[in-house]
Length: 340
Image (tube, rainbow, N blue to C red; front, side):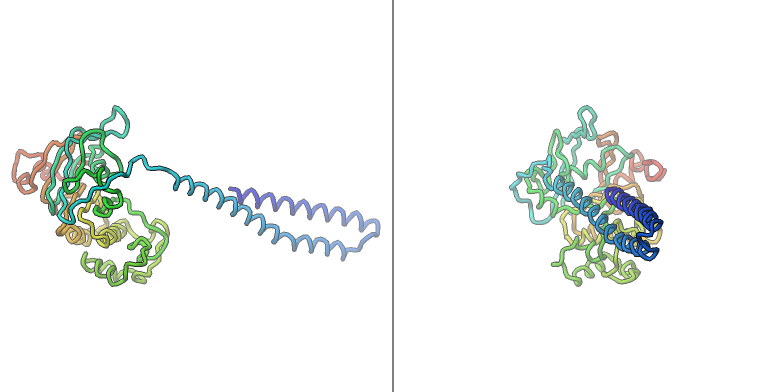
């Protein structure tokens, strides 16, 4: 906006100057004070000044925009988190359990999202969380990742309250994949490593192969050097999810949370994603928030949420075989339709 105003102002001043010089030149020519050649030279010299003046105006606009952007970045960096990071406790080195102990939470007073939620997920088990939109599923993943703190109760990772764990350590031990994947302008390599030059290509390729994504990798026009624009517009939603899975696998977390990460897959990537999810969850504790029946069959336990409460929790196979269970009825009618 600043550049447009400066550029328009510069053009206006130039055209006014040209009109004034032409009028003055005509007046002087009529009095035999100058020749037509002199008028031409005056106009020619004025025209030569236009480009440098326009360049200066453009640079001034860019400088002002940069100054405003820098101020906004400074304000962002100066913003203090509302979640205090005073934790000092260590958590187990491997085999982490996940526990919600009488957890209640509301984003705004008087509007509870979770109501006295309790569950225990043993190490290396995978939990599938089902429920309609607004039932509190995503909120549970955010509390585990400690983007918020509960008003009542506690969330534990490896029997340690997440509020007592340093935030950097907590988020190193948990890998989170959502349906919205943030991609940056740069190469596939940059987006997988988050611009960490210490991660070698061999390790990246090993992760891709371990997730069974060779076919996806072969389709990249320049391999790891394939350039992405901001937002990764040239990738489908499914391909972006595959990149996010590889990004998490590289970090080697102990707990993996997939928040409806397979809800927007195209047919070509669906079979690749199922294989990648299996590899990603192997020997890890996992939480899958999903609507797709194909994803739920990967879990050991099922938890069904409704209006912020747990209405059913148990082993997936047992609930599938129990004709009186809510999960059995959901499978009969189809999860996508029932939970829409």
